[in-house]
Image (cartoon, rainbow, N blue to C red):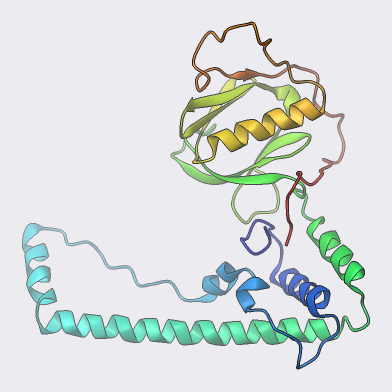
Length: 271
């Protein structure tokens, strides 16, 4: 989750996590210790975010302009553009190598400071840092919100499912945009193979996702572990196809006001 960017935190903390991972893997710093690649220690997207954005090419405004652009692209001008792109890509790759070397050097310096720390201590410190994120213990899914409460268009979000609540995050942001305890959720289910519906009180949220079944199953698992899931009896035939039948949640599962507590999902890995 850390390497894939699903634990939003500062770059300084990400470097410390990488150092703790090295201490756990190799013990104290040594120039002879096996060294993982940087992408096995640090989220690659953080390095890519430092690079300058690619220049935007405005679209041709008329057919004649497109025709002229096509003719030019087939001649010497096209060759010049291709050369410019190759040079730009080479510069970006060089910049990426520099950023990677700088980040690795910072990680190594933090690793040296951990001398004498045992593997269990390093692992405990690693998890303690990750637990500082309020969403720790939630399972995150990439979704596109199709029916936004504020009436905007599709929005890429994280759907976080925890033991006590379902939360919506803007990718990379530590605090949720909204959070729904299970007592506020009236039903959920699959509208089709790629659309998940979540009914919260007086509104329906529709999420486009490739993990409809995984989301539904995880919600059912959390409810079942709380002893609150009302499953249909085997002799009761379904009244509609399974993909269209929502799961109705019992009321009264909303936790008392206070800090949102989390627990890691079964089988999850935080490194």
